[in-house]
Length: 510
Image 1 (tube, rainbow, N blue to C red):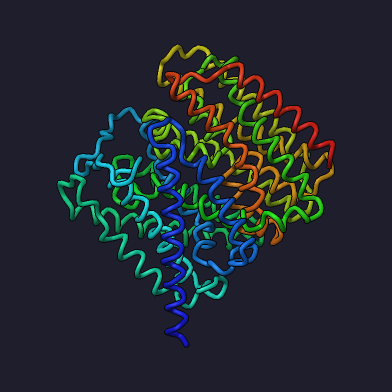
Image 2 (cartoon, rainbow, N blue to C red):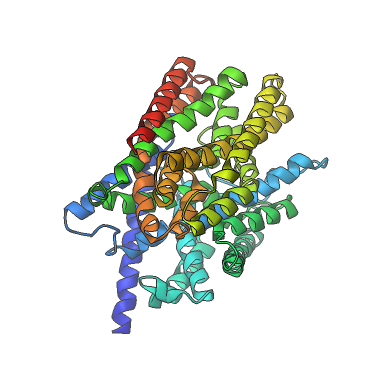
């Protein structure tokens, strides 16, 4: 029977890698030749397929029949560790007076297409990222002795071995690698480092849990960012390259499949309608309201500022994935990790106050109001700096760092305060805020159970549903990329106004 269960696990592994990699490749094919991000297609594709699996009786809500797909959706922290590490590197490079050579002198990717819109190296990254996400997650669970908490846990040793071994040897033969041994060893070192960060961050989270319920991602952010700052000269190996390029798209693909499976069921849950309505409205308001401030007040209407500014200002999963994948150009890709890391420094307030509020059962409004004032001050200083930048890269980056921190505080605590005052429970407010911002950190924290088991099970659905607003988001950014980086100002004004009306209306409905 044990052999049968291991074969059963391997079957699910094959189904998951086929389903998710095909989803990413189809998405990339559909946007090939345009400036639009493939994440836009992954949103719709994932939700539709997840819902169809339930409607066709192939699965039940939550996709218990496809445990490896569900497992991929739970690897958010792994994908973010890669982004945090790069952010730590970029911050160290920015603050240091030394000139660091950012060019990789031993690896040159291939540009030859094997699938429309995807080169052979990119295809290798997508497959390797899937293997790494599963391999690292299963290895982490094995080391921390949590296999009983997972479906197929008895087969995690086999899955970890197969995935990590395949990821280790999988190299694009069409890429130019001057020192293959060094490149492969770098990948192995990066895998070990990520597993160490995962286990250490989980241990720290458990150690402080008796005092305050800080989630694992908080400590993972500190450790990986610190490691990046300590190793600013580290040239990325195959593990980092793959996770930066395809980690977030694959995590979102898995999450949206699970979220889509909850679609019909969730609409019947009392109070969830107001969560979704605020999620939709918040998506528009916080995104386009932030863009309006950068464009009209900060005079920074260029995608090199707008994309990383809002990716960091909201810890926005969609823009984060699009930026790190290079969808909005090299400048946005290099700035995004900085902007993602900077507001996470402010998460020492976010997670401590929210963790204390979760234990208390209600939001600590007395703490959120001073932080809202501080966030407003940071945004004011940021816009002042950006307005005077006049194209100076260092001034723009400084302004975006301040904006990311300030807008993050305003968006997170503004959402929680508004929803709590309106009468929404903290559990539902956590789903609304995470979904309304597409906030990766809050998503991971809710998914880990910071606000209860009900929120943990439903967050994939509410998070995925509000991603349906992303046709507006990615269409606007895609159009800007095709218009020499300039965003359509009238459309931003209209959408920001519509978002404001929606947010006010949604709170009145609670």
